[in-house]
Amino acid sequence: MDKETFYSEHWRKIEPERIQRYEAMFQWREENVRTLQSLALGVGNRVLDYGSGPGFLALGVADIVGTKGSVTGVDINAQFVEDANRRAASYDNVDFHLLRDDAIPLTDVSVDRVVCKNVLEYVPSVERTLTELYRVLEPEGRILVIDSDWGFVLVEPWSMLETRRFFEAAGPAFREPNIGRKLSGLLKKAGFTDVKVEIKARADLTGGGLAVLRNMQSYGDTFGTLPKSESSKLLEVVEEAVATGEYLFCLPQFIVSAVRPK
Image 1: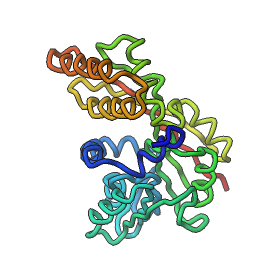
Image 2: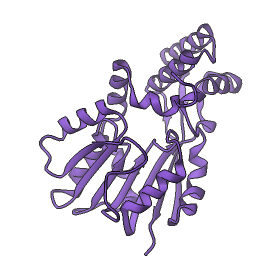
Image 3: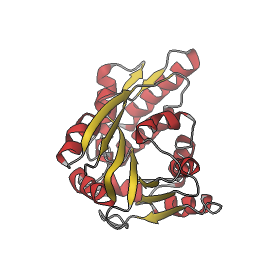
Protein backbone atom coordinates (compact mmCIF):
# COMPACT_ATOMS: atom_id res chain seq x y z
CA MET A 1 0.00 0.00 0.00
CA ASP A 2 1.00 3.61 -0.58
CA LYS A 3 2.07 5.21 2.68
CA GLU A 4 0.74 8.59 1.51
CA THR A 5 -2.84 7.36 0.98
CA PHE A 6 -3.00 4.53 3.51
CA TYR A 7 -5.02 6.66 5.96
CA SER A 8 -8.08 6.36 3.69
CA GLU A 9 -7.27 3.23 1.67
CA HIS A 10 -7.15 1.02 4.74
CA TRP A 11 -10.85 1.85 5.20
CA ARG A 12 -11.75 1.08 1.60
CA LYS A 13 -10.20 -2.39 1.82
CA ILE A 14 -10.60 -4.09 5.19
CA GLU A 15 -9.46 -7.64 5.85
CA PRO A 16 -12.06 -10.02 7.40
CA GLU A 17 -10.50 -10.10 10.87
CA ARG A 18 -10.65 -6.30 11.10
CA ILE A 19 -14.27 -6.34 9.92
CA GLN A 20 -15.04 -8.70 12.79
CA ARG A 21 -13.27 -6.47 15.30
CA TYR A 22 -15.17 -3.41 14.08
CA GLU A 23 -18.49 -5.20 14.27
CA ALA A 24 -17.78 -5.93 17.93
CA MET A 25 -16.52 -2.40 18.63
CA PHE A 26 -19.32 -0.50 16.85
CA GLN A 27 -22.37 -2.23 18.30
CA TRP A 28 -25.19 0.07 19.40
CA ARG A 29 -25.02 0.64 23.15
CA GLU A 30 -27.37 2.56 25.40
CA GLU A 31 -24.55 4.98 26.23
CA ASN A 32 -24.86 6.17 22.62
CA VAL A 33 -28.10 7.88 23.60
CA ARG A 34 -26.18 10.11 26.03
CA THR A 35 -23.41 10.73 23.52
CA LEU A 36 -25.94 11.89 20.92
CA GLN A 37 -27.86 14.04 23.39
CA SER A 38 -26.74 17.40 21.95
CA LEU A 39 -28.28 16.45 18.59
CA ALA A 40 -31.70 16.70 20.27
CA LEU A 41 -32.94 13.78 18.21
CA GLY A 42 -36.67 13.17 18.08
CA VAL A 43 -39.42 11.65 16.01
CA GLY A 44 -39.31 12.94 12.45
CA ASN A 45 -35.68 14.05 12.21
CA ARG A 46 -33.87 13.46 8.90
CA VAL A 47 -30.36 12.31 9.78
CA LEU A 48 -27.12 11.81 7.86
CA ASP A 49 -24.63 9.37 9.40
CA TYR A 50 -21.35 10.28 7.70
CA GLY A 51 -18.96 7.32 7.89
CA SER A 52 -21.66 4.90 8.94
CA GLY A 53 -19.45 1.79 9.05
CA PRO A 54 -21.34 -1.45 9.79
CA GLY A 55 -24.53 0.56 10.33
CA PHE A 56 -25.26 -0.08 14.00
CA LEU A 57 -25.29 3.61 15.00
CA ALA A 58 -27.60 4.52 12.10
CA LEU A 59 -30.04 1.77 13.04
CA GLY A 60 -30.07 2.93 16.65
CA VAL A 61 -30.78 6.48 15.48
CA ALA A 62 -33.54 5.17 13.18
CA ASP A 63 -35.31 3.71 16.20
CA ILE A 64 -35.25 7.18 17.80
CA VAL A 65 -36.50 9.18 14.80
CA GLY A 66 -39.15 6.61 13.98
CA THR A 67 -40.93 5.97 10.71
CA LYS A 68 -41.71 9.67 10.30
CA GLY A 69 -37.97 10.34 10.18
CA SER A 70 -35.15 8.92 8.09
CA VAL A 71 -31.49 8.00 8.31
CA THR A 72 -29.03 7.98 5.44
CA GLY A 73 -25.64 6.38 5.99
CA VAL A 74 -22.63 6.88 3.74
CA ASP A 75 -19.28 5.10 3.89
CA ILE A 76 -16.28 4.46 1.65
CA ASN A 77 -16.17 0.72 2.38
CA ALA A 78 -18.36 -1.41 0.10
CA GLN A 79 -18.52 -4.31 2.58
CA PHE A 80 -19.76 -2.00 5.33
CA VAL A 81 -22.45 -0.59 3.03
CA GLU A 82 -23.57 -4.05 1.88
CA ASP A 83 -23.71 -5.41 5.44
CA ALA A 84 -25.48 -2.29 6.75
CA ASN A 85 -28.16 -2.46 4.05
CA ARG A 86 -28.69 -6.13 4.90
CA ARG A 87 -29.11 -5.26 8.57
CA ALA A 88 -31.56 -2.51 7.61
CA ALA A 89 -33.74 -4.81 5.49
CA SER A 90 -36.62 -4.57 7.95
CA TYR A 91 -36.40 -0.75 8.18
CA ASP A 92 -38.34 1.49 5.79
CA ASN A 93 -36.58 4.67 6.93
CA VAL A 94 -32.89 3.74 6.57
CA ASP A 95 -30.58 3.40 3.57
CA PHE A 96 -26.83 3.21 3.08
CA HIS A 97 -24.75 4.42 0.14
CA LEU A 98 -21.17 3.97 -1.00
CA LEU A 99 -19.19 7.21 -0.87
CA ARG A 100 -16.79 7.34 -3.82
CA ASP A 101 -15.33 10.82 -3.30
CA ASP A 102 -15.89 13.95 -1.21
CA ALA A 103 -19.37 14.53 -2.64
CA ILE A 104 -22.24 13.37 -0.44
CA PRO A 105 -25.05 11.86 -2.55
CA LEU A 106 -27.72 14.16 -1.10
CA THR A 107 -29.25 17.40 -2.31
CA ASP A 108 -28.70 20.73 -0.57
CA VAL A 109 -30.39 21.26 2.82
CA SER A 110 -31.90 17.75 2.71
CA VAL A 111 -31.26 16.71 6.36
CA ASP A 112 -31.74 18.43 9.70
CA ARG A 113 -29.22 16.41 11.69
CA VAL A 114 -25.68 15.17 10.92
CA VAL A 115 -23.60 12.78 12.98
CA CYS A 116 -19.97 12.05 12.13
CA LYS A 117 -18.29 9.63 14.52
CA ASN A 118 -14.56 8.83 14.38
CA VAL A 119 -14.22 9.76 10.72
CA LEU A 120 -12.56 13.16 10.28
CA GLU A 121 -9.16 11.89 11.43
CA TYR A 122 -9.09 9.88 8.19
CA VAL A 123 -10.53 12.13 5.47
CA PRO A 124 -8.26 13.69 2.81
CA SER A 125 -9.52 17.21 3.58
CA VAL A 126 -11.46 18.07 6.72
CA GLU A 127 -12.30 21.46 5.20
CA ARG A 128 -13.89 19.93 2.09
CA THR A 129 -15.78 17.38 4.15
CA LEU A 130 -17.20 20.02 6.49
CA THR A 131 -18.20 22.12 3.49
CA GLU A 132 -20.21 19.16 2.18
CA LEU A 133 -21.78 18.51 5.58
CA TYR A 134 -22.73 22.20 5.79
CA ARG A 135 -24.27 21.99 2.31
CA VAL A 136 -26.64 19.11 3.04
CA LEU A 137 -27.67 20.40 6.48
CA GLU A 138 -30.64 22.73 6.56
CA PRO A 139 -30.44 26.12 8.34
CA GLU A 140 -30.79 25.69 12.13
CA GLY A 141 -29.93 22.02 11.69
CA ARG A 142 -27.54 20.41 14.16
CA ILE A 143 -24.25 18.60 13.59
CA LEU A 144 -22.41 16.36 16.03
CA VAL A 145 -18.79 15.41 15.36
CA ILE A 146 -17.09 12.86 17.60
CA ASP A 147 -13.42 12.10 17.17
CA SER A 148 -10.33 10.90 18.97
CA ASP A 149 -7.17 12.77 19.79
CA TRP A 150 -4.30 10.30 19.80
CA GLY A 151 -2.04 12.80 21.52
CA PHE A 152 -3.88 12.05 24.77
CA VAL A 153 -3.99 8.25 24.63
CA LEU A 154 -2.98 6.37 27.79
CA VAL A 155 -1.92 2.73 27.99
CA GLU A 156 -0.96 1.32 31.36
CA PRO A 157 1.58 -0.17 32.09
CA TRP A 158 3.46 1.32 29.10
CA SER A 159 5.75 4.26 29.70
CA MET A 160 5.05 7.58 27.99
CA LEU A 161 7.93 6.89 25.58
CA GLU A 162 6.64 3.40 24.71
CA THR A 163 3.14 4.75 24.15
CA ARG A 164 4.41 7.54 21.90
CA ARG A 165 6.62 5.19 19.85
CA PHE A 166 3.81 2.68 19.40
CA PHE A 167 1.25 5.22 18.16
CA GLU A 168 3.71 7.21 16.08
CA ALA A 169 4.48 3.93 14.29
CA ALA A 170 0.79 3.70 13.43
CA GLY A 171 0.88 7.26 12.06
CA PRO A 172 0.25 6.34 8.38
CA ALA A 173 -3.23 5.18 9.42
CA PHE A 174 -4.31 8.75 10.18
CA ARG A 175 -4.52 11.92 8.14
CA GLU A 176 -4.83 14.00 11.33
CA PRO A 177 -4.27 12.01 14.54
CA ASN A 178 -4.85 15.08 16.73
CA ILE A 179 -8.14 16.06 15.10
CA GLY A 180 -10.04 16.17 18.41
CA ARG A 181 -8.47 19.39 19.67
CA LYS A 182 -8.93 21.05 16.25
CA LEU A 183 -12.62 20.31 15.71
CA SER A 184 -14.13 23.39 17.34
CA GLY A 185 -11.97 25.77 15.31
CA LEU A 186 -12.57 23.87 12.08
CA LEU A 187 -16.35 23.89 12.56
CA LYS A 188 -16.33 27.64 13.18
CA LYS A 189 -14.17 28.18 10.10
CA ALA A 190 -16.67 26.16 8.06
CA GLY A 191 -19.46 28.54 9.08
CA PHE A 192 -21.11 26.62 11.91
CA THR A 193 -22.16 28.48 15.05
CA ASP A 194 -23.08 27.67 18.66
CA VAL A 195 -20.07 25.34 18.84
CA LYS A 196 -19.85 23.37 22.07
CA VAL A 197 -17.12 20.94 23.15
CA GLU A 198 -17.32 18.06 25.60
CA ILE A 199 -14.46 15.65 26.29
CA LYS A 200 -15.35 12.13 27.30
CA ALA A 201 -12.53 10.06 28.78
CA ARG A 202 -13.70 6.55 29.59
CA ALA A 203 -11.22 4.22 31.28
CA ASP A 204 -11.17 0.66 29.97
CA LEU A 205 -10.00 -1.72 32.70
CA THR A 206 -11.06 -5.05 31.20
CA GLY A 207 -9.18 -5.32 27.89
CA GLY A 208 -11.66 -3.89 25.41
CA GLY A 209 -8.97 -1.55 24.11
CA LEU A 210 -6.83 -4.50 22.99
CA ALA A 211 -8.75 -4.53 19.70
CA VAL A 212 -7.60 -0.95 19.09
CA LEU A 213 -4.01 -1.77 20.02
CA ARG A 214 -3.96 -4.78 17.69
CA ASN A 215 -5.19 -2.60 14.85
CA MET A 216 -2.42 -0.09 15.60
CA GLN A 217 0.16 -2.88 15.64
CA SER A 218 -0.99 -4.07 12.22
CA TYR A 219 -0.50 -0.56 10.81
CA GLY A 220 3.04 -0.39 12.16
CA ASP A 221 3.74 -3.85 10.78
CA THR A 222 2.48 -2.82 7.34
CA PHE A 223 5.18 -0.16 6.97
CA GLY A 224 7.86 -1.49 9.31
CA THR A 225 7.74 1.69 11.37
CA LEU A 226 8.26 -0.30 14.57
CA PRO A 227 10.05 -3.66 14.77
CA LYS A 228 7.45 -6.38 15.14
CA SER A 229 9.46 -7.90 17.99
CA GLU A 230 9.04 -4.63 19.89
CA SER A 231 5.34 -4.17 19.15
CA SER A 232 4.60 -7.81 20.00
CA LYS A 233 6.41 -7.47 23.32
CA LEU A 234 4.41 -4.35 24.15
CA LEU A 235 1.18 -6.22 23.40
CA GLU A 236 2.31 -9.09 25.60
CA VAL A 237 2.92 -6.67 28.46
CA VAL A 238 -0.59 -5.26 28.07
CA GLU A 239 -2.18 -8.70 27.90
CA GLU A 240 -0.37 -9.69 31.10
CA ALA A 241 -1.54 -6.47 32.73
CA VAL A 242 -5.15 -7.32 31.85
CA ALA A 243 -4.73 -10.67 33.60
CA THR A 244 -3.17 -9.11 36.71
CA GLY A 245 -5.54 -6.14 36.94
CA GLU A 246 -2.82 -3.56 36.22
CA TYR A 247 -4.17 -2.56 32.80
CA LEU A 248 -5.82 0.72 31.80
CA PHE A 249 -6.59 2.12 28.36
CA CYS A 250 -8.00 5.59 27.80
CA LEU A 251 -8.53 7.46 24.53
CA PRO A 252 -10.42 10.74 25.07
CA GLN A 253 -13.24 11.45 22.66
CA PHE A 254 -13.99 15.05 21.68
CA ILE A 255 -17.75 15.45 21.32
CA VAL A 256 -18.36 18.68 19.42
CA SER A 257 -21.79 19.99 18.48
CA ALA A 258 -22.72 22.96 16.33
CA VAL A 259 -25.54 24.52 14.32
CA ARG A 260 -25.81 25.71 10.73
CA PRO A 261 -27.06 29.29 11.12
CA LYS A 262 -30.07 30.76 9.30
